[in-house]
Image (cartoon, rainbow, N blue to C red; front, side):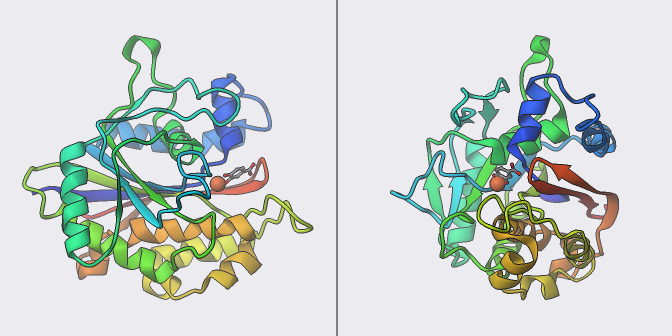
Length: 289
Ligand code: DHB
Ligand code: FE
């Protein structure tokens, strides 16, 4: 059977992608940020998954106000990097895993969570920046990501957005789905977006280090309690775009301890301000073997 081996959490600031693509990772502004991911890139090489289930949000790129799925699972064979206004990022096309994605869709929908099935979709910085941070730039001689990726897009842009509780529950359903797939695949689940940031209005630039770090503490130690926190607390404390953090609860809900198994091992924790307008947080949690 397939199993979830680990979860990864990271912010997705688009300027990080631009810094990588323009060769600025050693600039004094960016160097401390990228240094926080050195461990992670080595860890990913040492713990290469067969598939990454990547929870992220689309920023009105593939979806617009014309169509707003709350939870959308990418079942296609491939997903192209989106043109977000400056041309697509020069990163590989994302290879999907249609068989596992279709199985997860079947299982999660039969488990009473309604998903939108997406068979064609471009992926924006919400998905490509976490891949870049964890994998680095793939060499031209072998221009591909290290493994297939199943994109799982969550609406955290246009209200009403799903609650942290719903996200935590759907993570548990995703775990049940993965563990009933009849192939011995190692699957990682990544929760992305956040941490505190607000991109517009009088509070633009808001950063709340204390709240962010308390979120990380609770996500590790008591995700059930964190899942009960209402939206308004995220928006007040972490800014309007801080609401992206509810997506981390999907990945956390898929970890073994939530289903009565052992506690995860914290392999890496990193926090850095600033990256553009955003506080960057990052965690790697492993399920004990
Ligand atoms: C920024 C952060 C985001 O999450 C985003 O989607 C766009 C911009 C920023 O900090 O610049
Ligand atoms: Fe964002």
